[in-house]
Length: 447
Image (cartoon, rainbow, N blue to C red; front, top):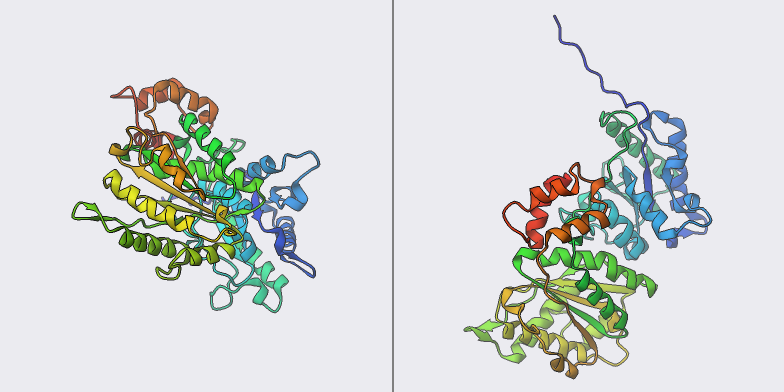
């Protein structure tokens, strides 16, 4: 007897939501490419109802925000319920805090499929995707549009942009068709929200968050240097991501400038024969590392004047993240002194508030006492605000209960709070953040 043939079809009632992220600067007279793309997608929805797409499920803020909507909440809620996120890539959208640090970060954190749609020729592929657990860059995603040879071709370089956008929408339709073959949950079952890979790092540490917020409120025309401290078992860089993607992003938004993508700062080791090296040599090493982080070239910014010229040309705030090697406190302090001296020597009109330097210090020896700097040490530098955060603390059962409620963990986990506590606290009364994350990730479906 022949085996029966199983044919997958779209489950009844399955719907698809698509979110379009774009910069208002790309809406140009006689060339509204975002509007053309949105219209082409609506046309696809009306012609192919089997895709589960519909006009009202395409989020394009010009058409979907209603009077009285809270703008930020409406946008982020729309991202969270989408099954496809289309980023209209241009020089303007890459500089947009809303597009990159909010909308794209939420989509990546929720695991929503991302399609970059290249509007114009710009340096885009190397941009890190904020919130992405795998550390991918935009160039790692299957971008559109492509020409007949399968090569990327920006829309503005095409003779007929409308036709190219229509072809791109057709390709998106095929993707939605493939996705629709996934039988998924039973009809009528509401989808479970995707889980942010940083969810565990929102547990407790409110005191440190308030300390960071107070520092941000005092941050004015200076550069900002943040010392985030903890043990290796805390995964301090991930905790910093929590602060950057929410708190730092919010204060930059209030100033109506863009928070640009974060860049790594490869902090140099300064020990020579077990002691900090010659201060002049340390200063050269630090300047080269800073130049490499900001420009990709180690010798482009040789001094304070070069740093000032680079900052003058920036339209937004650039955050750098450094994870120094474990060295004695005196070694880290020697490097930081060289960095602070470099910033202090910039011309008076330098827009230093466009530079944020975060140091994730994972060294138990630096957790006791005031840390690297005493308050009186900082009086010699007026042009950098140094914010030394308190060390991260271990989590208790009560911390996790509070996290369960405040972060709506029940939306992401089949266990109730008591069952989760029993699974997480199996052999200890407290947990460092990294270990808490490792134990809770499988329970949240993060693997």
